[in-house]
Amino acid sequence: MSAPLAFEDVVAIDVHTHVHGSACEGEQQVDPSMEKFYEYFGADMVIPTVDTVAEYYRQRKMMAVTFTVDTETVTGKPPVPSNEEILELAANHPDVLIPFGTVDPNLGRAAVSRVERLVAMGARGFKFHPNAQAFYPNEREFYPLYEAIESAGVPALFHTGHTGVGANQHGGGGIRLKYSNPMYLDDVAVDFPSLTIIAAHPSFPWQDEAISVALHKPNVYIDLSGWSPKYFSDNLVRYANSLLRSKVLFGSDYPMITPDKWMADFEKVGFKDEVRPLIFKENAMRVLGLDAHA
View 1 (cartoon, one colour):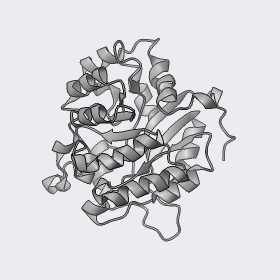
View 2 (tube, one colour):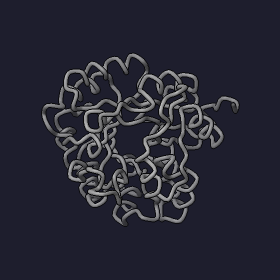
View 3 (cartoon, rainbow, N blue to C red):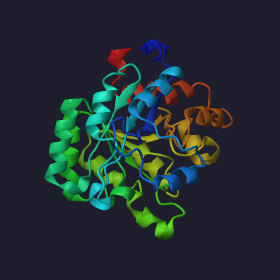
View 4 (tube, rainbow, N blue to C red):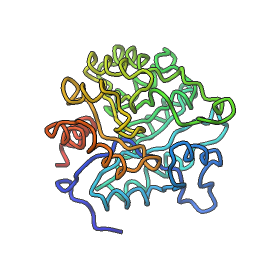
């Protein structure tokens, strides 16, 4: 393992990475359907564990928010790796890893209990994927879940827009795109004004809706993961360079898109020099409460 990374040496904070493999002996390493997912992104079939993500980012002098997604009520399969494994192993890498939990919102009160337990274990935020978890984020039945996350003082990160999950599969793999319009997060932002909300990804085909919500609601941010910057809309770049310069965050979607590739493509897009340190590190420091570590 490389030497621990000093916070002052961190060059970027990637707010969107995935763990797809378990370090537990005999446990399933990846769902076979994930092969189509990697194929969609044109990515090599890399099955990262917590430890390999940590070493990958430490070598690049980056920190990383990392998580999996719990879709058990939809798929019948528990997440691999488990929340507990991610949190326990990430504790060995506090210099680079910021572990988020994931809970299936369709579990009702049990989801709230899981949030409380995972926060106690060290979860620094929570990831939701409305498409894969088949829920509208603004449905009132999920509000107790947001109350628990808001009370814990940690962010909630929601997938928004198009998804590679189920793409090019028969019937889209059963995945419905309708759930991830970022406008649904506007209701959540109104009703939970102290909850930090991260709208993950350029929200194609609803990019302007995401920009509007982030402009209007102080507690809503946009992460730039899941798309090469060369595909960003002109409007997204324009607002990231101006009115949203304090509201956009670097994210890659590793391992589907590597930070190396994302950053290389970022250099070819018209982001202002003075905005780059905000996107790469400073905005995430504030959103994730990392100032105390500086």
